[in-house]
Image (cartoon, rainbow, N blue to C red; front, side, top):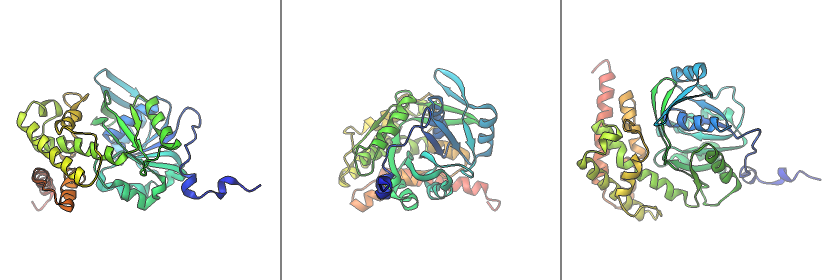
Length: 338
């Protein structure tokens, strides 16, 4: 009798639910910085076979030597999890979670080839827009799941991460909106780890929901240099955030995206819910490291889509300009010719 599996097209084979060898899925967290470390720790504690990949040698060495120290409002715990600076020598995994910075997506997924096998799933949980298109060009759209998470993380020192998962949700889905066995299996793995996860038949709406949350706080935190606890104490900051979200909602409606928010204040409130007082937005963390931010894929994405749709976005345009100016200043300060 011929092999029925061999007769099926590759796309069909790759939509199978991953097998749970042993206790859980075999997972590679590609871009295990602050958020990736926090999520990877939760998955590893729940029994998933996790490998964290981060180019920061000091962070990787600290994790391998002493474990990953995870700090929350409830205290600190140490999680034993494997870490590496790249995917060299790795065997194929069930799930690759992509959490690299948006501008590094193509390089990272191309370098992750050893971890991606015939039935591997690749899922982006990155902030902003456009990552799924890049990933699909490299690994094939049929391998992809999309998702967004409201979980937060911040690296305090090599091997030490501040995690904000309480009350934070994660949404995953197929790009075509189907509810498949494989997306259910991924959601189940996350839920087993205490990462509250639901499956959506409108993942583009979820992506835009998270975009609005990021647009509300990221740039303003970077400009003011305030952690979340202090950011939310400034009424003028809240007004600017709501104005930026209002523009984003108008753009989403013009693009035909079904978002869940009706009140532009809701994404602003959602951004800070459950996070420690001292938690810093990703854009602020990047600026403090002197690195490029993801502004182009967040407020910049709203502004670009607004221009495409004929929707004015003056607040988002201004926020992008301010962050670009800060990036330029940091680059100039590092230049020997400055």
